Length: 340
Image (cartoon, rainbow, N blue to C red; front, side, top):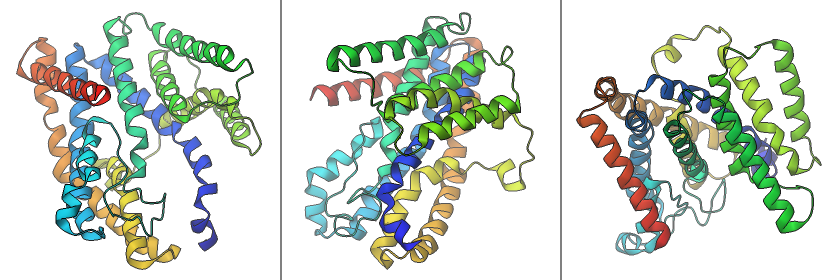
């Protein structure tokens, strides 16, 4: 186990290749949210209250509490450093991994990264932007737009690769795989009444996914992952499995995603690289902060859903105006950041 911790770099590609599972599930569930919404502003508002409050708290916690506690800089130097200021661009999905002098001598997961798990955030936001754009062109009434966008975007990527390199596809960026997995999950929701959900197809999906992930298989075969993992994920998600009492009343998954990395880094800083010390420190802290995040940040933020849904039913109201304004503000900040 100790050797596995020290050589985690060899495991990252395998773990990363399983991330599309979560994106496929998200695509399926978010497509359901889109179908229930009557306005695009209502859909955007629901996405904002689900994603941003907990993300903002994690960014603040990392920069203003964990950072000052573990930086090797004096506090004035820490605050004046550009890495500290840039860290707050995480609010808009422009991911910044480092804080000044934090974990740069004993990083566990990836050098001095404070929150390496956030690498998926820009792609998740891109998925929401694409889905909102598809909603504007009427995907709820023209569900063929989903598969058409998936295959056309894949075709364009293949064409671009051929024109640029003049060779068969040998590499597919994981970010694109995540986006396609999300869109496949969305398409499965749109065609849920036409798709045969069968355990035999699920086994085929497992076989295809396993073959793609085998060592030595060209990365170009990643194009199969969005389809195979999306079907498998949705099939398992539709299986009637009785949930426990805790899972029935709380959803700590987002909090675990947000906090697990930073607390593993904290564990290494405090106790070194022994796997049992990392587990003993990081797991309780991650679960604790995930619970706090759910009960005191995410759940209260989600209580705003009733105002958005009420205004969405009327297709007008302050909640929709605020949702649209927040989306424009975030988009404006992202554009300004990109141009700057």
